Image (cartoon, rainbow over all chains, first blue to last red; front, side, top):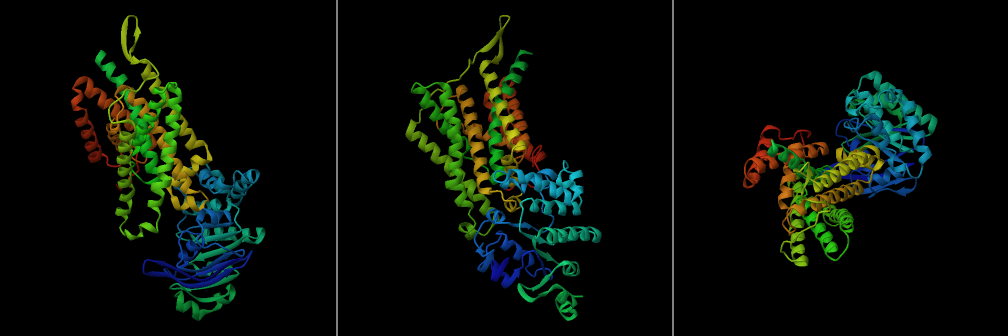
Length: 237
Length: 303
């Protein structure tokens, strides 16, 4: 389980996270929703070690991960898929996926190939295109690639930042479905950041609503989805 | 015709060495985002180490290997002791502008160059000394005619070819090579993939250090060894890297050969005094016509 308490992250004088507390239950999908600039991405970036918080506590399976480097946080089982289909365009599909398992090659040699095969099984389209440069893929394929890259590190917690960004509804559905299946069948814990609240709440177990760096609601997803007043106030529909 | 052939041969042999110098610069630029002006200072230093070993009765090959290994070691040490602390975000937060922050390591590399040259002067005295070649520097004789190609040229081209093939295999076929390419292309994604980018950066410095040490060993037999011998080589190598594209290893090699040919043809058809002018002209032309280099990507030039 991931636990975040009173987290504050600043960029110069701008306070992006202003005392955020939340938790992600094991083998469940927790979604963090909110408008642009609410601090959703900063939250994930602080958890994965890309940003350093000014104060607060982050514990993962009982251990503090504050002040750890991203490279070490991945090794503890937390994989982050950052915003904007983060793949390396100049590398091939195969290389992009392999990259995520490089650090496991010595210790878990036999498992590395299994993890790669599983990624291709989850997204067969990537297998067809494995020799292509990642830059030549469509947006949806790139997102699948970014998720695969994260999955081959064999995470127990997946931090997923706006997978729906810039994608057609059908593709979004396909990707969200895959993540949902993964969570339900393998027990993966997911922390999903989304601006597309309806899609996210539809699949999540728990929902956290963020506004201007503060948590304004933290409830079961179904309850949050049903709260029309809250939606109108913070999400604008 | 003879002059033409001589110019081609000499250009190939020199070009190969400049390709090596340019490759060293490109590796550190890609791996760490720094133009390392200390590079040939490092090479000068390790060539002195080799020279001392050989002068004390060791074989050329012991000096050769020790120079390459100490080149790699010196590169790594500079990264760990100087460059890594400088790029440490918290300490440089005082300097708010990005361009200033990018300039710091470059200025540091100039400082390192000064320190290495001064140290070499103190340890080995500043006068010039010769440096041996492992093969004859007289042209091959074919049917009574002396050819413009020497056994040393063959040695140079073989060394450079082996280095280029090995580095290219390393980058394409090994996990560490993939990790280094990933770090060069997108540090954030590399880190999130679990790649220890500090280590891959140090490795760039090590490989670059070894490659430039090799360049030093291959350059000094035809000139002499002094603390400033290799300054011109850095300038030529830098021009070669700019011509080829600062972020492209293949471009660096191409640029090296282009510069080798330009220098050779100016030497044979004009006078050696004009070489410096010719290099400047190539640098200027390249910056005007194709600022990102022949094979470089467009948004690379920051320094």
